[in-house]
Image (tube, rainbow, N blue to C red; front, side, top):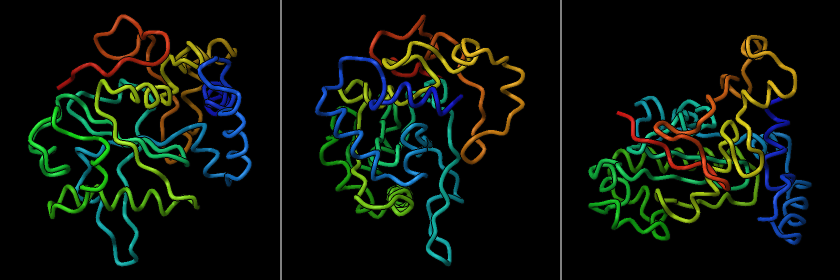
Length: 237
């Protein structure tokens, strides 16, 4: 059910008019070239937190492989405004920067003193070049994600909270209500005739990801998501 819902909410198949015919055709042609892991990630992207990645992650081992942070549920309930999150769908990497991220983290990662001074267009060029352990860790994580996907090279887009491209990020949080389908995962299961207790007893997909979806209502403190995309996550400490 999770992957079926991901397909229905994807740019390739969602029944909305925000995707032009040319763009949809290009997406279908791209899907024809993807291998199975990439296609699975396209319909069910992988999201992980970067700002609090444990020390065991982000450093190459003796074989050059980098351990990645744990996957998060694809819902804004997994996020906070003081966090940095990476989302990859097998074709593109998105990095979302919360408005309340610590200034020390921004300085270590991007070399800027404040959220307002962060330039998303220049951010990728700075990551891993400042000599800071956090910057190096995230650069290694990006390299590992790219190494797990076949060519072409996965582009990175850095998104600040409130940027127009933010809608693209939150449209990928398929366990929330999105532009593609105004149902949470729990609601989708109920519509399809699945009982929640049965769904929770299934094996989690993709590396231990729990099947349970976010509760209806979207982000913390929000009465409901706007049409188009999920709102930014509420502030949680």
